[in-house]
Amino acid sequence: MAMFPITGYCVGDHIPHLVAVDTEDTMDQVAAKVAHHSVGKKVPMPAGGPVYDVFIGEQKIAADVTLGSLGIEPMEWVDVRPREAG
Amino acid sequence: MLLNRDDWYETSRDLDWTLSYVDPAEAFPTSWSGTDGVPAEAWQKWEEPFRVSYRDYVRIQHEKEAGVKAVSSALGRAGLFEKLDPAHVAASQLHMGGTCMVEHMAVTMQSRFCRFAPTPKWRNLGVFGMLDETRHAQLDMRFGHELLKADPRFDWTLKAFHTNEWGIVAVKALFDDIMLNADCVEAALATSLTVEHGFTNVQFVALASDAMAAGDINWSNLLSSIQTDEARHAQQGFPTLEVLMEHDPARAQTALDVAFWRSTRLFQTLTGPAMDYYTPLEKRKLSFKEFMLEWIVNHHERILEDYGLKKPWYWDEFMRSLETGHHSMHLGMWWFRPTLFWKPNAGVSPDERAWLREKYPTWEADFGGIWDQIIANVQAGDMAATLPETLPVLCAVTNLPLGGACAPHEVMDHKTVYNGRTYRFDSNISKWCFDQDPARYAGHNTVVDRFLLGEIQPMDLGGALAWMGLTPDVMGDDVYSYAWAKEYAQA
Image 1 (spheres, each protein chain N blue to C red):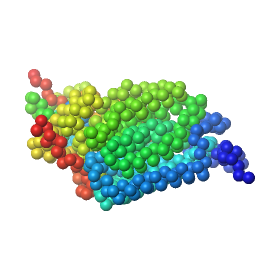
Image 2: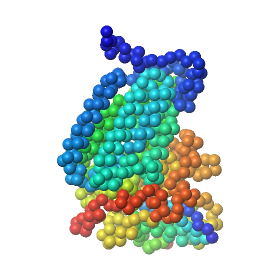
Image 3: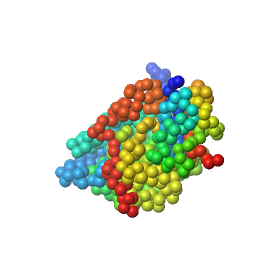
Image 4: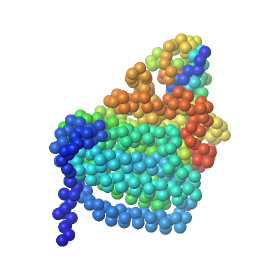
């Protein structure tokens, strides 16, 4: 369990933010921490509620995967998008 | 019998001597002169059109100084400053903090020309340039000092460059590089030709015009007086380019292309918000984009063509960025307003927004939604939701926020791995700049890098603000206390 900085980009915002997450965080928790700086502030709440998918590059990461298991570098770019229905 | 000027002028500016006790390579090391690959005799062709003697220079500068002082004294007595629109005043504070010490850095650059330029004609002109830049720094400090009694933010005219304020760090990053770190040839291409002959028109002509319209005759007069000097000493760029085109055109192309983009990004930050958001709507002459197209784009295209250079490979991306980059920077600066030493105007009242839509056809689709969310939060009284809780991530070349060069739907990750470290950029073009000369940029830590290294304590936004030198008496907030957002409720 360790603090881990990422470049968190909530799709729809105009810039990514420095976001402090934890290596034990699941992707759902990572998404919530990234969205915190944008959703309801600069980006409207998604129609389906605050449920998101996390992408690293083009790859969607499963919601229950922990950040620490990904082996990514600090400040890796993480995209957060509203989860599509279905 | 006194000689006529024409009898002695050529000799006076071309006075040189043949070194015999010192190796010329040691007296003029290429690391300072920048003459690698250019034979010494090639510089004999270096010519500038301003045939000015020291006597002429002093007389003309004396007249300019007397003019600036007379206007300033008369206006000070009339108390005009107190009548200025506060959003416009913010533009002058941003300008003073952002440029005063750049003028002072330029003294050092010009003094390098005086000492290390490869031709006496250039060294001669450098002397006048050095005196010019000394004058500009002093004019700015005098302006700021006189207004200290009205607003402590003018203290940042001198103070800004002695702080770690993020925007000032970005300004320093560029000018440390192209003024203080660059050899004479590169400085002439990047600073004299690109910044002084090109981009300063946006700051010193466009803003001077807007300032005059806004009733700030004192600042307008100061800007115009400075620009008359820039127009002269900026000429050091053209003959340098001419010589380099004969011997190393590839270097000229790269140096100009890098400088043009880095300058674009900086002026999108310094001038774009001031012109399109801080200048009162009814006083605006041209939009930032219109001014860039008229004064920078056409001008740069002409220079490139005249000297046999190609347009930068990124020209289409640059043109698109004219529609978006400064809007993104403005939005970010307003959002992170506690990190500023001036009070920004959001500039998105219904009338201002209509103007933005007219001038920038994609503005509404690009940025309107984000401002709508902010407006909704202001109207709901949820001010906490309009303020930052963390930092943006910064570009390893420009030191400006990632994503700040484009529209939201164009934001993407641009990165390079160099010596095992990943560097991120605000655009594909800034990444290209880095890739041309990685050693130049690598290892320079951005404000966020410093934060992560633990240099900023406590490690939170409050710690970052204190580290940047922001104190409550100058810390930025919305200049109109959010009145513009309430207009939407009545619409």
